[in-house]
Amino acid sequence: MDKVYLTWWQIDRAIFALADELRKNFMPDVIVGIARGGLIPAVRLSHILGDVELKVTDVKFYRDIGERREKPEIRIPLHGSLEGKKVAIVDDVSDTGKTLEVVIDEVKKAGASEVKVVCLSMKPWTSVVPDFYVFRTDKWVVFPWEEFPVVVRE
Image: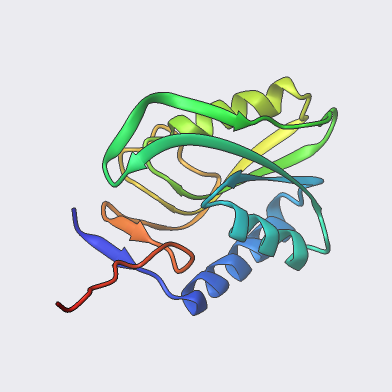
């Protein structure tokens, strides 16, 4: 699968652009970051938007590039009520959309009054088109916080 490598500078510019749109169109009371890929964007958005409350959930779906589990599994559930809160769910990419579907359901069960999905990128085949995203690609996105392959010369 083709890959696109993003830099820290590109990610920072993308997160600031997302924050600007959130301020104008949907200022959240709570940000829910999806571990692992959504945590850095979620933390940055929380700070940029004025220390918006941040909650974390962990959902595992991928085992490796192109290798998924049968269905997403919640490993760290949301804690506490979101009753009457406007919630922005943040992840790095909306690929199949299955992880986001699970988290949207959990956030609604916790009582959120409004839910929006915020991602850096989305794939054209996703079942969940984010309410806010920066770019669309059919490539595997490698974010700067992920491991780059290391070549060892023998």
